[in-house]
Image (cartoon, rainbow, N blue to C red; front, top):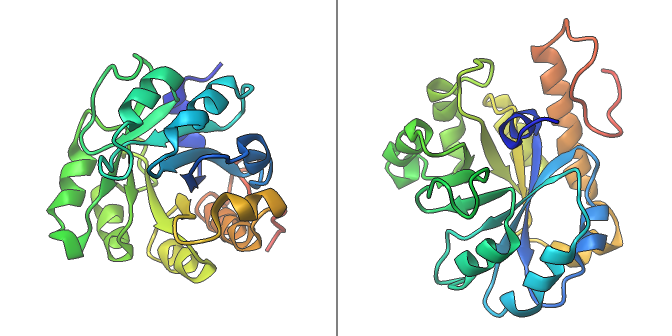
Length: 229
Protein backbone atom coordinates (compact mmCIF):
# COMPACT_ATOMS: atom_id res chain seq x y z
CA UNK A 1 0.00 0.00 0.00
CA UNK A 2 1.17 3.53 -0.75
CA UNK A 3 1.91 5.84 2.13
CA UNK A 4 0.05 9.09 2.64
CA UNK A 5 2.84 11.17 1.06
CA UNK A 6 2.79 9.09 -2.13
CA UNK A 7 -0.99 9.28 -2.30
CA UNK A 8 -0.84 13.04 -1.91
CA UNK A 9 1.69 13.38 -4.73
CA UNK A 10 -0.67 11.46 -7.00
CA UNK A 11 -3.57 13.74 -6.07
CA UNK A 12 -4.29 16.38 -8.71
CA UNK A 13 -7.74 17.56 -7.62
CA UNK A 14 -8.64 18.38 -4.04
CA UNK A 15 -11.93 19.71 -2.66
CA UNK A 16 -12.15 22.33 0.10
CA UNK A 17 -15.66 22.15 1.55
CA UNK A 18 -17.38 23.88 4.49
CA UNK A 19 -18.31 21.70 7.47
CA UNK A 20 -21.35 22.31 9.61
CA UNK A 21 -23.83 20.55 11.89
CA UNK A 22 -26.11 18.07 10.17
CA UNK A 23 -24.03 17.59 7.01
CA UNK A 24 -24.36 14.16 5.43
CA UNK A 25 -20.73 13.36 4.64
CA UNK A 26 -21.35 10.00 3.02
CA UNK A 27 -23.62 11.58 0.39
CA UNK A 28 -21.32 14.59 0.04
CA UNK A 29 -18.29 12.45 -0.75
CA UNK A 30 -20.33 10.34 -3.17
CA UNK A 31 -21.18 13.54 -5.04
CA UNK A 32 -17.56 14.44 -5.73
CA UNK A 33 -16.02 13.39 -9.06
CA UNK A 34 -13.83 10.26 -8.91
CA UNK A 35 -10.83 12.36 -9.95
CA UNK A 36 -11.02 14.25 -6.65
CA UNK A 37 -8.37 12.51 -4.55
CA UNK A 38 -8.61 14.47 -1.30
CA UNK A 39 -11.11 16.48 0.73
CA UNK A 40 -10.35 19.30 3.18
CA UNK A 41 -13.15 19.98 5.63
CA UNK A 42 -13.23 23.63 6.71
CA UNK A 43 -15.29 24.00 9.90
CA UNK A 44 -17.47 26.82 11.13
CA UNK A 45 -18.68 27.58 14.63
CA UNK A 46 -21.09 25.05 16.10
CA UNK A 47 -19.93 22.19 13.93
CA UNK A 48 -17.99 19.93 16.28
CA UNK A 49 -20.79 18.37 18.30
CA UNK A 50 -22.27 15.83 15.91
CA UNK A 51 -19.76 16.09 13.11
CA UNK A 52 -16.97 14.51 15.14
CA UNK A 53 -18.98 11.34 15.66
CA UNK A 54 -20.02 11.27 11.99
CA UNK A 55 -16.45 11.59 10.74
CA UNK A 56 -15.13 9.00 13.17
CA UNK A 57 -17.83 6.54 12.06
CA UNK A 58 -17.35 7.07 8.33
CA UNK A 59 -16.30 3.99 6.35
CA UNK A 60 -12.82 3.89 4.84
CA UNK A 61 -12.60 6.02 1.71
CA UNK A 62 -10.09 6.01 -1.13
CA UNK A 63 -9.80 9.77 -0.76
CA UNK A 64 -7.46 11.46 1.65
CA UNK A 65 -9.51 13.24 4.31
CA UNK A 66 -8.29 16.27 6.20
CA UNK A 67 -9.34 19.04 8.56
CA UNK A 68 -8.53 22.72 8.24
CA UNK A 69 -7.73 23.89 11.77
CA UNK A 70 -5.92 27.07 10.71
CA UNK A 71 -8.81 29.40 11.59
CA UNK A 72 -8.87 29.44 15.38
CA UNK A 73 -11.68 32.03 15.40
CA UNK A 74 -13.87 29.98 13.10
CA UNK A 75 -13.31 26.64 14.85
CA UNK A 76 -11.65 27.03 18.23
CA UNK A 77 -12.23 23.33 18.97
CA UNK A 78 -10.87 22.12 15.63
CA UNK A 79 -7.63 20.79 17.08
CA UNK A 80 -9.50 18.74 19.68
CA UNK A 81 -11.66 17.23 16.94
CA UNK A 82 -8.59 16.42 14.84
CA UNK A 83 -7.16 14.49 17.77
CA UNK A 84 -10.39 12.52 18.05
CA UNK A 85 -10.90 11.87 14.32
CA UNK A 86 -7.24 11.28 13.37
CA UNK A 87 -7.52 12.58 9.77
CA UNK A 88 -4.97 11.84 7.04
CA UNK A 89 -3.83 15.47 7.07
CA UNK A 90 -4.38 18.80 8.77
CA UNK A 91 -4.13 22.38 7.50
CA UNK A 92 -2.47 24.55 10.15
CA UNK A 93 -0.99 27.99 10.63
CA UNK A 94 2.33 26.26 11.43
CA UNK A 95 3.13 22.53 11.09
CA UNK A 96 3.04 20.42 14.22
CA UNK A 97 5.11 17.30 13.37
CA UNK A 98 3.73 14.11 14.91
CA UNK A 99 0.26 15.60 15.49
CA UNK A 100 -2.51 14.48 15.50
CA UNK A 101 -0.78 11.18 14.72
CA UNK A 102 2.70 10.27 13.55
CA UNK A 103 1.73 9.66 9.91
CA UNK A 104 -0.40 12.78 9.44
CA UNK A 105 0.48 15.14 6.60
CA UNK A 106 0.67 18.88 7.25
CA UNK A 107 -0.51 21.59 4.88
CA UNK A 108 -0.28 25.37 4.89
CA UNK A 109 -2.33 28.14 3.29
CA UNK A 110 0.14 30.39 1.49
CA UNK A 111 0.18 34.17 1.19
CA UNK A 112 0.80 35.45 -2.31
CA UNK A 113 2.17 38.72 -3.67
CA UNK A 114 -0.75 40.65 -2.18
CA UNK A 115 0.27 39.26 1.20
CA UNK A 116 3.89 40.27 0.78
CA UNK A 117 5.08 37.30 -1.30
CA UNK A 118 7.44 36.17 1.43
CA UNK A 119 4.77 33.91 2.91
CA UNK A 120 4.73 31.70 -0.17
CA UNK A 121 8.48 31.22 -0.26
CA UNK A 122 8.63 30.52 3.46
CA UNK A 123 5.80 27.99 3.25
CA UNK A 124 7.29 26.13 0.29
CA UNK A 125 10.68 26.05 2.02
CA UNK A 126 9.26 24.86 5.36
CA UNK A 127 10.59 21.35 5.83
CA UNK A 128 7.84 20.45 8.28
CA UNK A 129 5.08 21.18 5.72
CA UNK A 130 4.16 18.41 3.28
CA UNK A 131 2.13 20.55 0.86
CA UNK A 132 0.73 24.03 0.33
CA UNK A 133 -2.56 25.56 -0.73
CA UNK A 134 -2.22 28.80 -2.69
CA UNK A 135 -5.23 31.07 -2.33
CA UNK A 136 -3.83 34.04 -4.26
CA UNK A 137 -4.14 33.55 -8.03
CA UNK A 138 -1.26 35.97 -8.56
CA UNK A 139 1.07 33.66 -6.64
CA UNK A 140 0.80 30.68 -9.04
CA UNK A 141 3.60 31.87 -11.33
CA UNK A 142 5.81 32.48 -8.31
CA UNK A 143 5.05 28.99 -6.99
CA UNK A 144 6.00 27.51 -10.37
CA UNK A 145 9.41 29.21 -10.06
CA UNK A 146 9.96 28.21 -6.44
CA UNK A 147 8.62 24.64 -6.67
CA UNK A 148 8.39 23.56 -10.34
CA UNK A 149 5.65 20.91 -10.67
CA UNK A 150 7.78 18.80 -13.03
CA UNK A 151 10.64 18.43 -10.54
CA UNK A 152 10.37 15.38 -8.29
CA UNK A 153 11.96 17.16 -5.35
CA UNK A 154 9.44 20.02 -5.45
CA UNK A 155 6.88 20.26 -2.66
CA UNK A 156 3.32 19.57 -3.88
CA UNK A 157 1.12 22.66 -4.03
CA UNK A 158 -2.47 23.27 -5.07
CA UNK A 159 -3.89 26.43 -6.63
CA UNK A 160 -7.21 27.22 -4.93
CA UNK A 161 -9.95 28.00 -7.47
CA UNK A 162 -13.72 28.33 -7.37
CA UNK A 163 -14.70 28.64 -11.03
CA UNK A 164 -13.79 27.22 -14.41
CA UNK A 165 -12.24 30.54 -15.42
CA UNK A 166 -10.04 30.61 -12.31
CA UNK A 167 -9.02 27.01 -13.01
CA UNK A 168 -8.16 27.87 -16.61
CA UNK A 169 -6.04 30.85 -15.50
CA UNK A 170 -4.22 28.83 -12.82
CA UNK A 171 -3.42 26.03 -15.28
CA UNK A 172 -2.25 28.54 -17.88
CA UNK A 173 0.09 29.99 -15.24
CA UNK A 174 1.60 26.54 -14.64
CA UNK A 175 -0.49 24.89 -11.92
CA UNK A 176 -0.79 21.11 -12.21
CA UNK A 177 -2.86 20.62 -9.03
CA UNK A 178 -6.12 22.36 -8.13
CA UNK A 179 -8.01 22.81 -4.86
CA UNK A 180 -11.66 23.43 -5.67
CA UNK A 181 -12.82 25.85 -2.97
CA UNK A 182 -16.48 25.57 -2.03
CA UNK A 183 -16.39 28.15 0.78
CA UNK A 184 -18.27 30.83 -1.15
CA UNK A 185 -20.49 28.42 -3.05
CA UNK A 186 -23.42 26.12 -2.26
CA UNK A 187 -21.25 23.73 -0.27
CA UNK A 188 -22.51 20.34 0.77
CA UNK A 189 -26.09 21.12 -0.23
CA UNK A 190 -25.01 21.18 -3.87
CA UNK A 191 -22.85 18.08 -3.49
CA UNK A 192 -25.80 16.10 -2.15
CA UNK A 193 -27.78 16.89 -5.28
CA UNK A 194 -25.30 16.20 -8.04
CA UNK A 195 -21.56 16.39 -8.78
CA UNK A 196 -20.62 19.96 -9.51
CA UNK A 197 -20.41 20.40 -13.27
CA UNK A 198 -17.92 23.25 -13.06
CA UNK A 199 -15.67 21.14 -10.87
CA UNK A 200 -15.80 18.38 -13.48
CA UNK A 201 -14.88 20.87 -16.20
CA UNK A 202 -11.92 22.09 -14.14
CA UNK A 203 -10.86 18.49 -13.59
CA UNK A 204 -10.90 17.84 -17.31
CA UNK A 205 -8.87 20.99 -18.03
CA UNK A 206 -6.33 19.77 -15.50
CA UNK A 207 -6.20 16.32 -17.09
CA UNK A 208 -5.61 17.83 -20.52
CA UNK A 209 -2.76 19.95 -19.15
CA UNK A 210 -1.24 16.89 -17.46
CA UNK A 211 -1.31 14.91 -20.70
CA UNK A 212 0.40 17.75 -22.53
CA UNK A 213 3.16 17.76 -19.92
CA UNK A 214 3.50 13.96 -20.13
CA UNK A 215 2.94 13.10 -23.83
CA UNK A 216 4.85 9.82 -23.55
CA UNK A 217 2.82 8.47 -20.64
CA UNK A 218 0.58 5.70 -21.97
CA UNK A 219 -1.15 5.44 -18.60
CA UNK A 220 -1.47 7.91 -15.78
CA UNK A 221 -3.72 10.35 -14.02
CA UNK A 222 -6.72 11.57 -15.94
CA UNK A 223 -9.98 13.13 -14.89
CA UNK A 224 -13.19 11.16 -14.92
CA UNK A 225 -15.13 11.88 -18.06
CA UNK A 226 -12.22 13.55 -19.86
CA UNK A 227 -11.96 12.99 -23.58
CA UNK A 228 -8.91 12.84 -25.85
CA UNK A 229 -8.05 16.23 -27.31
